[in-house]
Length: 458
Ligand code: F0G
Image (tube, rainbow, N blue to C red):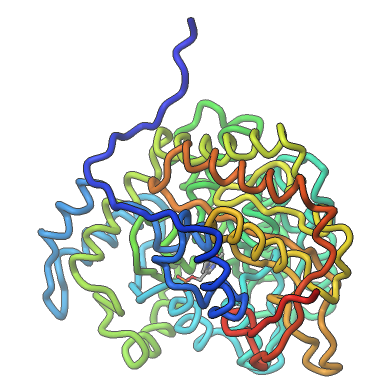
């Protein structure tokens, strides 16, 4: 008999979680104005709101915490972190920050001016926010196949090279850098191929531009390259990472994902001028150069996390769990962005709740139904998150309407995946009885999804 697959770790510490009754959940949801961000975590059974900062650290990381050096300047833990980052990426200059968006804030304060254009593949919300708040423009050059959720393709996170070249040829003087997000979160945790990274670099060189990787899930991206791209199957994850980063000039990193820590981030670059420029902003915004918003102990745990998560076995365990969940959804016929991405399944709500018009927010309705069904908290990445057009103030219905079920790293077991899939199946089976969605009662002007108040329609 073939030996089945199992996790590359065992469990040393557990955290109890609590089930609830449908009656309780209906009350809690009403109190939360049908916005799952407003729920208390204790009201959630399985939390798939995000994979950011929600993973479990290893015994080695907890041990490293005890060894953290809390010196204000020149801490040993900083040098451990810096050496690890240099080893994985080849970048010599490292600036810690308190999380990913802080890395964006510091680096973009130096690099982005009003009127600039920053092309890339599906900029993450905060990345876009840090560009737009400087009165610059984020231009999305993602490949069109990312929009076809049922199409199976290995690298749906790629940059469309033709779109990128068009932006560069028309606006070269306004472009401070190109940003490539690996993996492409917004398109469904979809990877970017090595070939694509190489082509981006070639075009960037042609126009004399530098390239930044938004690297929150770079290790998952490397895993997909190993498994899906010709020529990489015999390479180690660390070798693949070195090659990926050889096509970039710098990176912003949210360490809360592939760094396997609960809080942290950094900027790394090969260029001294970028380092010098960013230095002027990290000190007032974040902290001194060798801690920039992080405790010594957190830098120590991050150094270990980065080493662990660039090992094949760790990533294989991770992605295997996502693939297991996706295989159950396949069995039940539930449509999601295919193939499943590295950190989440993205349910295509418009293909599930077909009776609900977009004006009644199908993905948000499905998020609410899934919570009611089994206390599972997903996250709407759809029409509510898309906000309104800043000029016309109309809802932006042009994109996709997903429920993202993000899976924290090393936190839940495959049994939890079975619960998630079964709850989805129950909602899916009664999809035709769900004919009304939700309406907005109150919303903030920007980033409304965090605080929006909703009412179910009947
Ligand atoms: N870049 C990407 C691709 C991200 O997914 C995130 C965060 C950030 C940057 C910002 O990093 O949260 O450390 O400030 N994504 C989380 C998510 C919040 O749920 O996808 P941060």
